[in-house]
Image 1 (tube, rainbow, N blue to C red):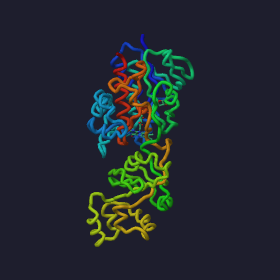
Image 2 (cartoon, rainbow, N blue to C red):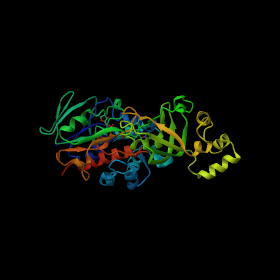
Image 3 (cartoon, protein in one colour):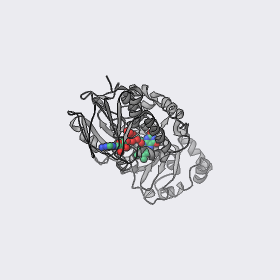
Image 4 (tube, protein in one colour):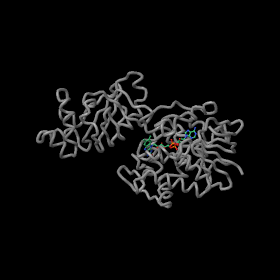
Amino acid sequence: MKKLVIIGGGPAGCMAAISAKTHHPEMEVILIERNARLGEKLRLSGGGRCNISANVTNQVVIEQTPRHGRFLYASLESMNPPLIKKFFSERGCPLVEEDHQRLFPQSHKASDVMDVLVREMNKLGVKIILHTKVEHVDLKKNHIQTSETVYKFDHCIIAVGGLSYPHTGSDGELLLKMKSYLEISELYPAETPLVSHEAFIQSKCIQGISLKDVSLTLYIEGKKKKQVIHDLLFTHFGLSGPAALQCSSVCRDCFVKKQKVMCKLDMLPQFKYHEVENMLKTHSLKEVCLKYQLPARLIKAYEMLSIDLSEIEFLKAWPIHIHDMRGFNQAFVTSGGVSVKEIDPKTMKSKSFPLLSVCGEALDVHSHTGGFNITIAMSTGYHAGKNFKD
Ligand SMILES: Cc1cc2nc3c(=O)[nH]c(=O)nc-3n(C[C@H](O)[C@H](O)[C@H](O)COP(=O)(O)OP(=O)(O)OC[C@H]3O[C@@H](n4cnc5c(N)ncnc54)[C@H](O)[C@@H]3O)c2cc1C
């Protein structure tokens, strides 16, 4: 029996195994995972609820993928948001839609998503090997070396993830070892929170406040680089939430180069500047905040700023200096990975080593938060499992 070995049991590896056994039942499919159970990162995702996908078209998934989105055209034909929805609801895990078209399991439990994947693999006869770290892939001898033994393979799929949240198992070690065969583009944290040393942040008086659908504009050396309308969270060290995470994509090198980075926050983007100015002629700042459901605690931050900042600027163009961004320990995804130039998007196979495929976050493709990263992990995984044979 010919043998497919898949390395990494996250959403990409599990979907690759399911797809391989579905399309090629004659193959022996072996999934090797270093942890004691599969999908540790997925179990944490969406705050333990797993924002598994988004109720959007393939085109929107591509638009929400700032790094090599166009690479996904073919894989999204094989597995995409409506097909993910169908796959999970047919297996007893219906998905429900929340704000920003995000899809979650109805049970609000990420573990239910993993249960579906594990049940399906067991049903199909995928051989799952846990607690086994792959140390080396030898593409000349077609075998992999694990902490325990050596496995020969007829085909191998790499699904080892990126480097973010390395304690979940995806620490980049095997990915970096693959450098002897494949071009690995520079790995750096993406979709990561922004650090600010501003006094109102450091005082923690607004820590924990979250704002819905505000506008955050990021400037580098005074030049506007990105504007995002989405949710924002003040943390004890700076800014998080989708608006800040998306802005992080443009400030990667700025801190090394010591460039000046600043955000301007517009808390009432639904109104024009002069409309808010008029409101403040007849209402106090506190009244405006209350009327538009902005937390009254924000006033404390304004009190620290009021010498230099007018009320209208505070509401419509609040400047927040950014001094750094968080590293891999807090990044939602990794930018960089196996270069898309190395991989045929129609099959996910390596162009130089046709017995090797790569899928998921190990690839140099990543999306914004909102369910898109698990979507692309499942989509590229499914596509790899379907198309690894000639
Ligand atoms: C805190 C957090 C929350 C997130 N929330 C969401 C969300 O709600 N929605 C969303 O779309 N995305 C979310 N993401 C991103 C998403 O979880 C990842 O993009 C996705 O899990 C990538 O899937 P993957 O299968 O490619 O890699 P991973 O999920 O990282 O899986 C890779 C697997 O390979 C294993 N492995 C690595 N090296 C080896 C080796 N040498 N031998 C054997 N096994 C190995 C690892 O242990 C791991 O289990 C979140 C990320 C984080 C960090």
